[in-house]
Amino acid sequence: MSDLFGTTPREGILAAVGYAIRASRMDSSKWDPLYQWFADELGVGDGQRGGPVVGKLVTELKQIGNRCDEMAKSSPEYAVISVLGDVTPEHVLSAMRKRGRLPSLKAALFLRESTPVRLVIFDE
Image 1: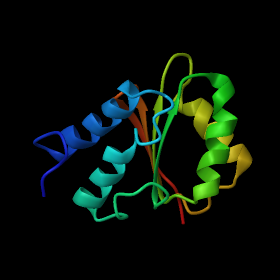
Image 2: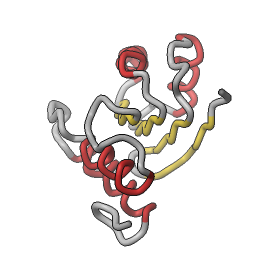
Image 3: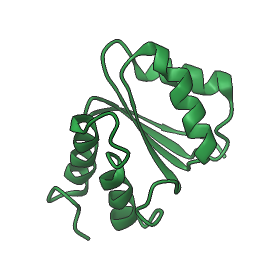
């Protein structure tokens, strides 16, 4: 299969995350390339928002709770979370564990901007 932006699957997912980072924060379609990548490369979902994949950008510590609540509303199986500034994957994971409202989540890929830093596989 071909990816949206790159010649390898890794390049494709990183390009999709980079697209979301560069897009306007108010652009509701900024994660659409990520959803399409999951559908094309992994056969997960139909490439549309609201499916089994969620993309989140966390730019400030005070946003973490809201982002966790947003994820819980959609019951995703896979999350791709890009953190910026002082936010770390550990901050987000801690909040996710405390809230405990993401039972459907199988895996979360954390990135520092568009660089992968941690992959978490959750027990079923």
